[in-house]
Image (tube, rainbow, N blue to C red; front, side, top):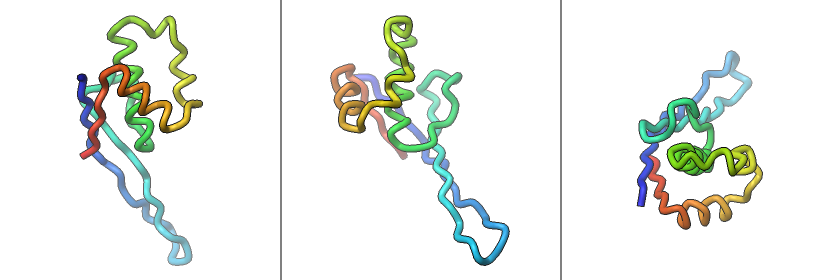
Length: 91
């Protein structure tokens, strides 16, 4: 089992006026994923980045289009992680 740990670096933006509500700007970072992937902007993207990192390390990325992961449903991505032996933890 390969574990990927992400730090929740999310923050609330500051609206420029009193009539607008602040928005949560999601940001999740990991030292375990490929650095070229950058920040994940929603929790499910953490799982996607973990899968892509494993594929890159296996040199399997040429056989699989990583963009297809972004079209998958949440349960499909989590099932794929389980079948690949990937665990994702968000702190």
